[in-house]
Length: 364
Image (cartoon, rainbow, N blue to C red):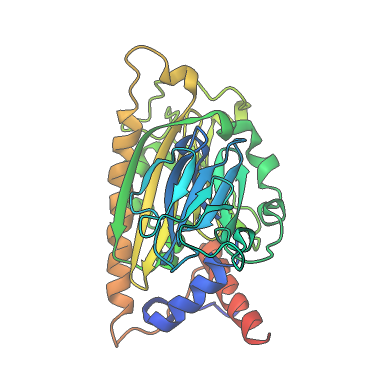
């Protein structure tokens, strides 16, 4: 049996290869941009920074989610500078006042000649937007395949957690000095957990559970609780009711899935934690984390989930730090690829996905 080796250093350090990967994964696949409750009403918006491209995510007058490149069709000026806000029925460029409807159609273009100029030829450049279980997905390709095709069997697999009904309690943003792929690799194995995560190892059996067969859309699997622990919290105690759609087996496990290219789903018996990866450079990635809870729990007097948030904030920072150390080590001229163990099937599968995608593009 031949052991698979880790990827050469250039996959984590080469800026040119990083830009090719952004085209390959973040501009051609559906990626998770946020949650639907971030824009509850028509005209509400937030900005998504997709590998240097600014995208306006909003709702039109009918409530449909829309996405537009954040550039005016007049002279290319960026329209929105605030990360989130609300349009008063229209989207207006701050430079010369070109004005668009919430559907992206050009409504007004001051000083343009009436006869030669056709407003319908200059709508905002649109990106594709879709919704799954409360998660907003974008695709910047011109003619993408449907989101349902990319998600494969995940909607049915995760339906019991009812994520569309959950609401965020807290959000955190982490700046990680690491390549985005190293963060995915770290998320998808727990051989490091007894060394790096003593608190996590006290409440879950890090060698338990089963991994799904890797797919082109996602990798992931389950983990069982240890002893009397019932959730991932500072002491393993569950202070909230179970999510209402879970069966007895699902109540006894945590699920960890990476949905390519940028969504991590950590599905717990009483809440869901999500990570969204936003690569900004070959060695820098922003990770936005949200903790989602059932509205019934959120409405209870004195609700608090600090036990879960503090647990994961500490664990997350342990992960981000080790990813930064990996980035530093791989950047050394002494680095050479090392062998994966047979227990690292998901990281090695992700590496194969990277190589297969590169080979497919080079053969086009």
